[in-house]
Structures are given as structure tokens and as C-alpha cells.
Image (cartoon, rainbow, N blue to C red; front, side, top):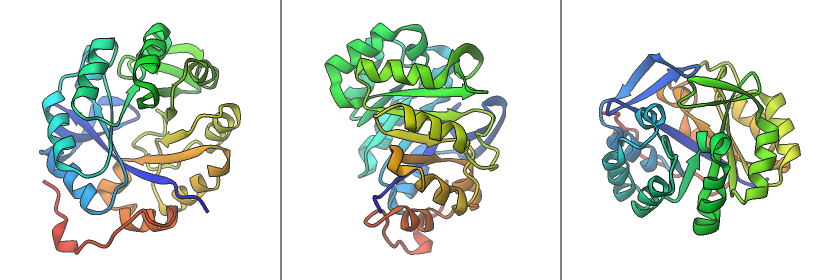
Length: 258
């Protein structure tokens, strides 16, 4: 079995580490006052990658928490991917200059495909596209607007432009712990050849195992948020299940969220 990355999510809103419910900013729940400390804890547990989202930046259209991002990158040994408000080439460049391994462009995929093309040409494999879908249709601007564009069809177009990966989030599943949208994920992984990273809905270890079953079709990883913070999914157990070489033992006393 090939290893699948288990990727803890660190969503930043007003400087805190939060989780939303179905993308609703009004239903944000705080899980840490210091996102850098949270990131370091996940890294200590052996996370192979971290997924950092600037929620304030997603709403405003430009990154807000670059200082927090820079601190996270400086203090964790694993690669970091970042999204939120990246709607210009200058913004993408600024994030990459801070040491991010992969940037995730969301709204730009729908509204500015030329930016995707330019970024892919300049930064190569460090550009991914984030497709956030509500009922299979792409949502943009911090999930506040839903288009009539089919997420899978947009993924096909982004693949042609050269993106290195697709991060697919089912908004109606996000933060609910009700299980991922396996049907849409299967459709996506059967459609595109680039690696797909799933996000939204994971609530149990069984959900992780179901996602692993999709891996032969291109699933590279899964982003897990609320379930890790609530303890419904144990990161070490998930890493063991996802494949060899993806975890390390850490004394429980070393792990304490800020």
C-alpha cells in the first residue's frame, strides 16, 4: 500500500486557530490562541505536511497573516502548504518567499485562470488549486459566493494549465465530522491525473480508511481539521493507517495545545 499524507489543518481567523462549520465564519470555534504553537505540536506528532489557511485573507482578497505563516515555516520541519487571499502574482511570490512548499489558489482558478497559468510557468510544481464546492459547484471568496461551475470540470481545466495538485473541499461536509463526500472524490480522481487531496468531513479513523481505498485513483492525501482537535481522530493512529514511514512516537506529555 502506498502512503497517503495525513495533513493537519490550521485555519487562522483573527490571529487564532479555528475551525468553521460548513464554511460559516459566524460558527467559528477556537482551538488555539497561538497557531504557531499548534503547528509545532502537529509537527512533533509526525505530520508529514501542514495545511495553513488565512481565513481573513480569503475574505479580503489578500493574505493577512503572513507573519504567522513565516513563523510556522521557520519552526516546523515538515513542508507547509498555504492558501487564502492569493489572487495576484505578487501575493503568490510573497508567500513562496516565506518558504512555503506549496501555494493553493482558489478564487483565482475561477476568476483569473491566467494567473494560474503564469504561476505554474514561474513556480512549477509549487502551485496547487483549491476547489471548494457546495453541492458540486465551485464556491469562491472565502466560500461566500457559489458559482454555477462544476468543480470536476474546473479541475480538468486547471490540470491543463499545469497545476501540481488539486485540493478538493466539500463545504457542506467541512467541520461536520459526518464523513467525506466519497462519490464526488471518486468522480474527481477518475477524471484528472494530477494528485488529489481531500478535505472536509473526516470524523473517524474509518473515514480515513475509506479515503485510502480511493488512493489508486490519485488520492495523495487528506486534510483533517476538527476531528483532530476534538480527538475523534488520533493523528498517530491515522498516520499508521495511512502507510509506513508517516509517523513517530512522541511522549503524550510533549503535546499540549496553546
